[in-house]
Length: 190
Image (cartoon, rainbow, N blue to C red; front, side):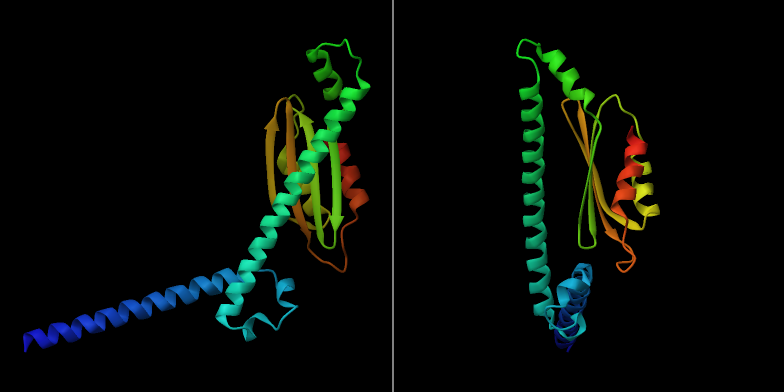
């Protein structure tokens, strides 16, 4: 009789473990689907009316889109850097040594570039190592002008620091005046 009780107890334990696993997986799927922006669901029905498999498929395709966008942005960044370095090399005198070339390129810094598409804004700041401005000040400018910073990072290449910020407009019907943002960033970094 004791053997029968332990077998039924073991079955109940397995059922409980499996139920908990399913509940946990359902929670994780819901969390993943909640990270996909609502704009992605407009093409299909609302998120609540989609099956869990459809939500996972949509999240997967969204992640792939983001990955492709990151790669495209990296390529654009590298292309921009190459074009800037190429133009500085053409304008410099041939017999100037490498240190003087660095000074010539450094004199053009900092650079502020702002691009806008739909409700997103990308800010790229290129500065020298000797130029000190606070990164949080740049974020504050964007937020004061009605944008919410989604991601911000920086990297150092040689004697240059590249700051990249991505922001979303908080109220799409109001928008953000990018010329004003650009001017405030110019005032901040110069």
